[in-house]
Image (cartoon, rainbow over all chains, first blue to last red; front, side, top):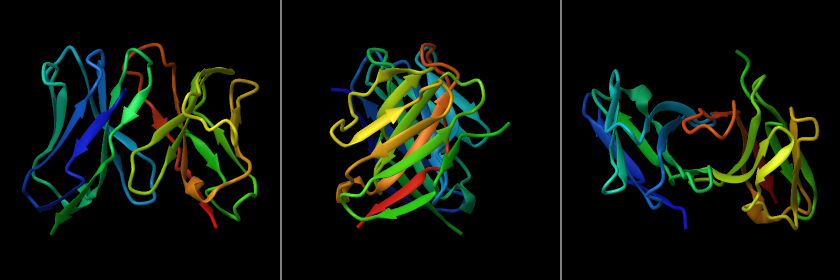
Length: 112
Length: 116
């Protein structure tokens, strides 16, 4: 069935280093891949998304890459800052059902 | 722009009791979603409305959960009777529509439910 796997579940980096979070999806018909950031006790907020007709998208320190052949996509955060500490969720939209399926989340800790 | 409004923010009930959560989506958004987020997990879709019609409720435990969006605007999610495993954050979300791929989904702050 529809499934999105996310790794790692926790990630600790030093301030200024880069962080990479990876997701794989099961439905090859998926065509939309958003990333959400959720701070403790807050709502998930969209930080970046990518559609299947592009391989990479960048927004300041955040970038997302998509490999349709391998059915995986990744979030890259460069020059991490303490305020980047949060839980990050990837998601994939399955064309077969139009549902947005979320990964299990990655807790990112940026150490000052 | 006003966001997705939810109430109550927090609720503690005993098992077998009932609870209801209310959601008001962003103005003009035709699609409304209820997600369940158990601690340490990603949000799981319970039900999706397009205006006042149900698009998908395949993951809704219909023996105890119900939801409605009678006038196609605000929505209520009810749990009766509640079980311990229903303890979670119930996130309401909305988007302009669901038929166009890439339509951004906006989340509310969530209603935190603890069943004791």
